[in-house]
Length: 258
Ligand code: SF4
Image (cartoon, rainbow, N blue to C red; front, side):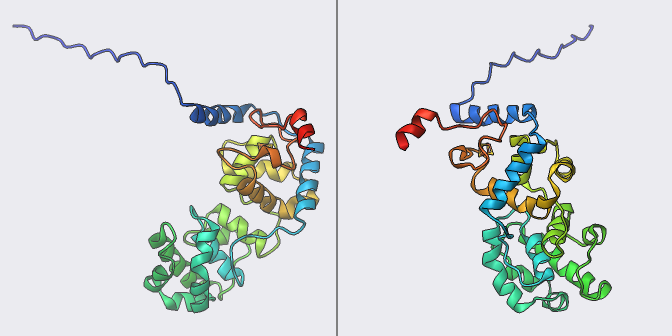
């Protein structure tokens, strides 16, 4: 008897997905990101002029005492908050603030110091390994090239850029989640990944602002242009921002408030 041929069941048509209002706002905002009109050169200049006026000398919020402890702090800060890293590092750096001391301290003790930070096991391993390499191959100096920095365990492009900028004054753009969002959202520098945004920022940020540009953008993204509900009503670049989802205070509201 011939076998019955079974045809695979047709998938049922999906019901139209109805998103709750808050989720819809976020989804709409994400969809709009690809359609933001680029800022003009004059708008970019004005944007950074205002950032500089508001914070002439922006600093990293990570605590460190020398280029080595800066490197360690940045490695520890991957996928963690600066505040969380700052709680753990003073005791660690009091115990070891040079590559030799850190290598001598060893992975197990480092782990104990940083156990409150996310991914602490991998990070402790990387800090111990990079300290040993610095002590043995670099005379305990922090390399000044991106290639040599990125060859160290746990050091990626962003970490290398932060160290080059903060420790050595180079005009690098360390694109983190905040800079990536702010750059795309405002029309300052569009890019599908952090490296594309970094390259675009290097092209469009005027020379006098390049040294501090990444700090201004991080601070703006961390405290004003936050991911879910940006605080457009108190944003100093509101009139320059091209994000279609931005909120603008209506004149009548402004008039009532004054
Ligand atoms: S206006 Fe809103 S969306 Fe635009 S940069 Fe300011 S906070 Fe961000």
